[in-house]
Amino acid sequence: DKWQSKSSIGEELQNVSDKFDSTRATIEWYLRSTEELKKNYASYNVPFDFDLVKRLQASTVKLAKYSMKMVMTAHQRLSTTQEADLAFARPQVEALMQQVLKFAFKIHQFA
Image (cartoon, rainbow, N blue to C red):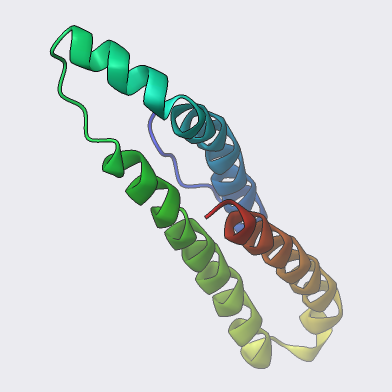
């Protein structure tokens, strides 16, 4: 499943959130099953670095950073927006800010 950039910030934010949600379940499974997997992998002489899973869990913070930068860029562009368009753009950007803050908190709880 390749990463496809989306045409709007809202779509991209939803895409990032969906990717995180699908990855989160797998990472949590590996973390819960670490001891059992270590035994199984060792019995078949399969090398696996379980620190990689922990690093992957911690690296999800970069998704929050990416998302927050994206929305902050949209917020900064409001200052250059024409007055007529501002009434339409401001509520959308505020909604994106709420969405990205909820997403960042969810990642913070996970990492």
